[in-house]
Length: 299
Ligand SMILES: [Zn+2]
Image (cartoon, rainbow, N blue to C red):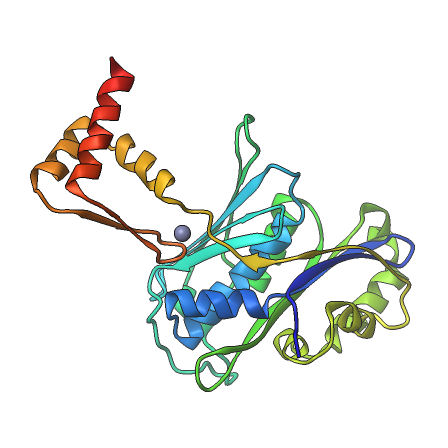
């Protein structure tokens, strides 16, 4: 039974709303494995990774996107980076945060995140990056992004995003559905009320994606009775693009003095990628080589 992670795009009604729906169970399982997150940290990171992929699907080809959730709660913030090719990576400040379930009997994501701000930075290559910031609504991620879409992009949106974590801490299901009203539909009360009706009657999104049904089946079920037109689909995955070369450049960027100091200690330097926990070791010889290169480029 293979349940691939992928994202679909569709239009509702007479092109009155656009829908992005995606299964991210595998993405979040990978993130949980890489970071060893507790259930509440898995849910917070998983929801944000899912939203990273949603925003990534709205980017142009070569653009990338960084989401920073800076909350005052014990989770210590969330960073997610996504691109338009369905790749996402991310981490949380404190993967070991452990909190009792909230009053509703759910993972206390809002409490773990705490009050703060949601930042979205869109890197458009040569142009100035776009930076949008909104205050967190409740730290539960879904409503925070709905507010972001409304304020920063003037797009009324419904955001359903969720992660179901099993008793052993392994994610059983994860996914999201985002519905955005097109400008023409904003006065169409009949369409809006029929849309709201369906969203209110919806099962928890995390349970929907924990089952065997495809994103297409889930979407056509949630919006049954409304005209639905599928546009495209894209595979999504947790992927870190870090490399030894990239960390070499990072070391070089520290400058000659700092590198010399490191080499003078006579011990290898280990750097760890925050996003995927891969380790890169640089021997004293490696550092000397980098110093030589630095010398050459300056000469
Ligand atoms: Zn990495």
